[in-house]
Image (cartoon, rainbow, N blue to C red; front, side):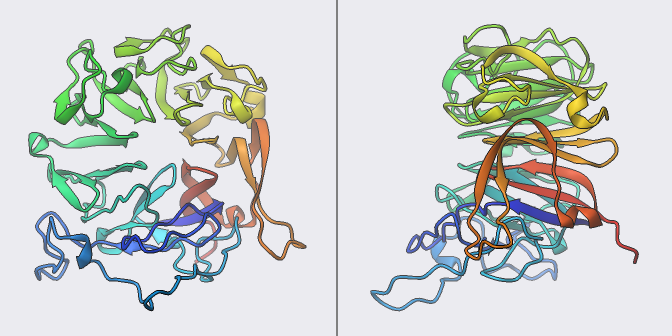
Length: 408
């Protein structure tokens, strides 16, 4: 069980009945779908919302005819997630969490998946095993259980991916209209849109069902990351492979060419993980080496590369360890406009377009931003009571999970 801290500007929240869309300055309003793989709840009773049920099955928000629904009060940014003002905030505790852009999904009590932000009409139905894999994007959600069942939730229902029946998924990464997974035995499957070769299948065609990437050399893949239109794969021996759009040098191959099949990078040190971030016009990629060094390549707008330069890079450059207090970096997360890093001494660093909390004199809770061209320590009162373990960079917000340092 993790404690959760939400920092930054709340994401857009769109209600499922499509009758009201709240602004970016409103609180997060959760929507809970409670259908599991067997379509039963934890008590063994049949769930009234069966797979494939219509959107009308969701509870409707009360409203008067011909009236305009008012959003809840503004929730001050950079507050602890347990705040109760304005709608329903993120939970203060969870089993797991996934973040991408303006969507957040959380595995809570009884392992239910709760969707905290909706974009492009997405909704999630399902429950998952506590140690299962899950991911989300602005177009769809995907989750897999340890029992070998994988679901992709698009619009109004979860779709059981029968080609993956019995396949135990190690990790899922949902990109913009496509999904990439790696299995426990190191195989990689991809499906969805194939724009600019993001699926790594050797062409730009889309795939309606999961298909194994056979263009990879014989190697075991242990980490995958998908963004708007480019994908990274990391093998068990520390090799990094990239595919998809190379428009801003985000593939790190030394040019702006696309790669329709995975291309091996010449990285100076073995890689632990890679994260694809940015949007269609400003994509970038981060690599974390086994030695704890962070490398970056791609679009440099708003300091996203963390190297102190405003010029985009076509090959990977190292972010100086001095910016992380000369500590080893253990994990990284690439968002849309900013990135996070967690060091070995449990300190969180951020760079890029950073959300600034409102001052004490600011009664309106106005969210401001600033650009950090190199990593800076994230300082917030809530972090003094938390030992961070997981970090997630979204769109102008961050989510940090960890264990409480308060005495019990």
